[in-house]
Image 1: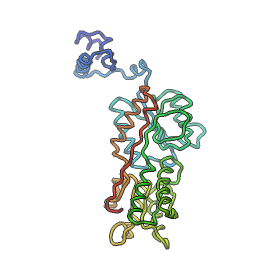
Image 2: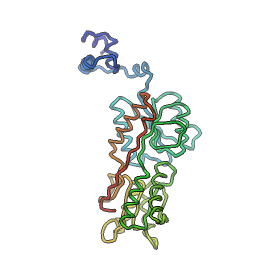
Image 3: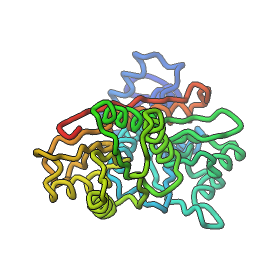
Image 4: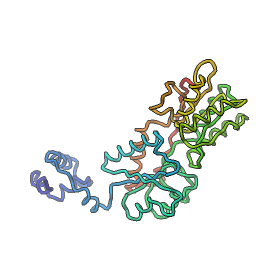
Length: 331
């Protein structure tokens, strides 16, 4: 089915039909509605590849994530990726996943940039000093950072106040009378991890409490489980535990439940960043730092990417969301 047939049926020029289907502003709303309705009735689909060449856009966005540690093991991250992809697909924009090895001589995302195979990049798990963002900024390529970094010029970013999340959770526990509070944290220098650790440390420092129960480990259930058992075996074990990811939290919850310390007469308070995974075998309303719904995050990021592609002011594409604290039954 061609544009000519639609144009003939509606008594319009082929140019008008083409511009209506491609969303040009110089076509009236009424005309566009007529054209779209006729195209749908006839089952017409535009030649997407030809349209992309003509408009100079690929209608594809790359999401760059680190190989080490692998965030694909994190259900929160994967839920967010799914929602971003879903929202972009509504606007016929494809999302490509790009695994990046920071130890490699050449980076896969730069091949995408140099060959213009994507219109923009989303860069996940940023560092305070992130060479990927600096490289993209030097190349003048549009990107949205999921996290804040130190760069010489304005750039687009979306982030949660990770510092506030652990700070508020730790302050809540302190106000409840806890003086021995542990943090199970990831053992890497990604910005959101260091921010969460600093929130915990500052809350303890302000209260004059020790951070001797701070532990750093890989983001896995096994690490959360074994570390929690080790903490409980100390001469002076913590009376409360905060975890900076839900995989640590799930392992900690299993260890506490196994020891009869998650609930009951002598519980150890537990706060899990992002809450327990949906597939957790622990059936308890665990206290959590909540960062909004995955649907809300996906829509926000997808909207910002579209604005980025359209050339909006970068200083207006900087969004910081505040987390919420839910005490549940374990804090």
